[in-house]
Amino acid sequence: MSRAEDALFGGACGGDQLPEELADERCRGPRLRRALAELEAERTAGQAEAGAKADQYLQRQRRGERIRGNVPVNAEVASARLRLEQAIAARQATIAEWEQRNADKIAATGSGLVGARPRPVDEHFAVVRARTWLDKALARAAERERQVADQRPRVRNVTDPDSRLMPTKSGFIQGYNPQNVVSADHLIIATELTQDTGDVEQAKPMMAAAEDAANLITGAHRDQAEAAQLTCTCPPKDSQDSPPTPTASPATGATRRSCPRHPNGIGTMVMDAGYLSEENLTAAGPDRLIATGKSHDVEKSARTQPADPPPDPDQPHHTDPVQQMAQRLRTPEGIATYRQRGHIAETPHGHIKHNTGIRTLTRRGLDRATAEWKFICATYNINRLVHTLRTTGHLLPGKA
Image 1: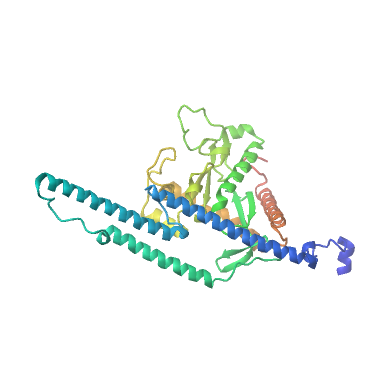
Image 2: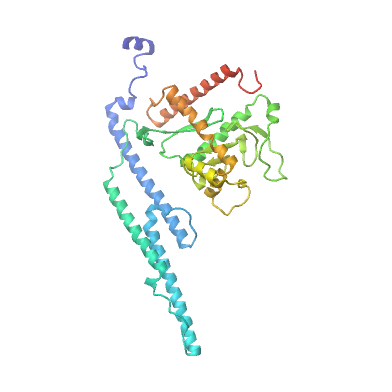
């Protein structure tokens, strides 16, 4: 069999040989050094990023700004200590001001102020509370240090140094994180393979890729007359604006005109809570729904705390973007749109894994693995095309 395959495909390119960098043992040393250098670079970059976030948070706290969200972990102790210092300074200022007024009254009338003296600094509730927060922050920091000391050192897979440990429902796998943008008719219109274990940093790149794909699709319409009859369900942003150009929406299957809220004909992009961040909610791009929690929590909120009407995205709001999104998801339109996410986004993955049996990638390295994954997605789309032709006899409604 091996000789027959060599005769058919060639002995050196049968497809089952190790890549050159793995077949030659002389490449092992450079590969190990590269992996170690990447680990060190990631550690340094992570520390720098965490330090920058901590410094920014502390600067805002010193300016007295109201800050939403959790305190960065590596700034927790410094923030608590600063809070204590601010509470002590505020109390000292209050006592000094009272002492001055009391002295002025004694000088003027011979008697001091009526009422009790201010509590000493260490007994005031704000100082006591701030000191308690500092003690708790110090305890948590000590516990984190113990956990870090007990952790195993980070490792890198030397067979495929580009791959990462990815969390799954049942543990971890060595691999990559695929990002797909899927249209309502289950076509993968944009895809990318990433090394990130999370999704939050991928929202903006994939929205941009979706816009490019939608622009390509809408620009390739063969029947412009039909496209010109499509309408948008959202009103113009300004009544004096010129009417937007009608386009179809490959992202949701809905029909919308291109407008400031829905560029390139995209209707609404729907994402799970893994993509949730204020930056992703407020970034330029298509209209979007991003879950503010697990699906069952989103459903429960929509059922028990319905909101109507939805917030107008063109009007200023005093609530933060996450609260605005939570309110929108509680509206009938919002929750109905979000419910489509599962069967739209997961259908291609389910088909690729369960129907075609592709559960692993055979190529090593991010570039090669990306090429393989995009090829898999292309074959899925071709399959979808063939299925549509067989079942309907045409590609577009009303087209033979």
